Length: 436
Picture 1 (cartoon, helix red, strand yellow):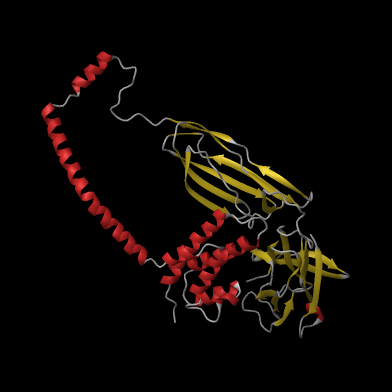
Picture 2: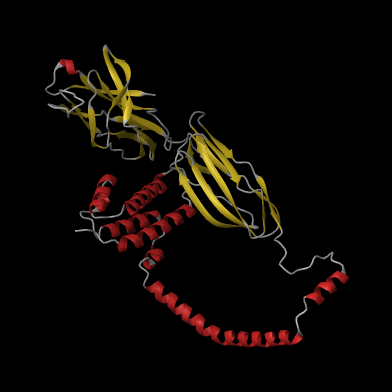
C-alpha cells in the first residue's frame, strides 16, 4: 500500500492527538520524532526522522513550521511525494506509519542541544470522490515532540593532523591519463567517501611535484567530496603523485585513525620535435641535399632581415608608450571596481559574513542578520533576486558557518576560496536593483 502524503534507529518520542471535531471512526493521528543517535560526538553525522501515524483515512499534510536546530548543521533529504506506509503497533493501538521528513544533522558544539518547533497541518476529507474535490474537511495542527541530544566532546589529545572528520572515511585518487607530453594536461580526481560528516569536513591539502602546475580546481559536495584538478606537465620524466592522508575520529572504535590514498606514477614524455628540425641520426649527405632543395635566394633573405630589423626598432621605441597606456587603463578600471575595497579589507570568515550582510541591509529591512535562512530567502525572492544569485548567497552563508564552527584548525586555502566567492557575489549584489 502506498499513501499520498504531500509535504512542503532509534529513540522514539510520541505526540498522540485525535482529530478536532472528528469522530472515533476517523481515528487518531500521531507524529513521531526519532534520531539515529541521541548522544553523538561533536561533528558526527546523525539522522533525524519525522513519521506520521494514522489509524484511518490517510491525511494530506502541509508544513507550517520548519524545525529549529540551534548549534546543529542540518540538511533535509528530499522525500518522494508518494510515500509508502507500513503497519505498526504503539501500545495496543494499530497504525499505519509514513516517513514525512528526514534530515541530516551534524552537531557543531558540545552540550545539550534540541530540535524543536516542527508543526504540520493535517486534513482529512469527509467524502472522497474521483469525480470532484473532497468536501467537509476535518483538520488539525500537530506539533512534533522535541528531539533532545547530548553532544559529546571528542577525546583529547587530538592528533595534530586531525582534519575535523568524524566517522569512517575512505580516499581514492585517480588520473584521466597515465602518460602525457610536456605542456599537455591531465585531470586528477580525489574522492572522499564514507559515513562521516562529508558535507562539513574540511578539504584536504593536495600538493603536487614542481614538474606539475595546477591550472584549475573544482570541488563538489554531496554524499561524497569530489575534488577535480587539472594539471599541466612542465618537464619530461616520471612523476609520483603522492598519497593523500586524512586523520579522522572513528566513533565506533572510539579512536583516531588515518585514511590514505595510494600513490601512483604519471609519465611525462618529451614534447614533439618542432616542424623543420632534423633527426640527429640523419646522414650528412642527406642533410646537405635537404638544405639544397629548400635553399631560399640570398637576396630574399637579406630583404626579410632588413624589414624585421625595422619592425624591431619601431616596437622598441613604442613599447614604453603602450606599457604606460595599459597601466593607466588598468588603474582606472581598478579604481572603479566595486569590489576593490572588499578585497583589501576582508580577510577572515567573520569579516566576509559581515560584508555580505552590509550589502543585504541596503535593500532588505529590518535587519537581515536576525532573519532565518527561510525568511531571508523569502525576502530576497520577493525583492526580485534571481534564483541563481539567491542559491549562491545561501550556499556561501552555510559554508561560512561550517568554516567557523566545524572542529579542527581553519584552512587558509578554504578561507581564501570563500573570500573569492564573496567578492564575486558582492559584485552581483551591488548591481542588484530590487523591485518595489
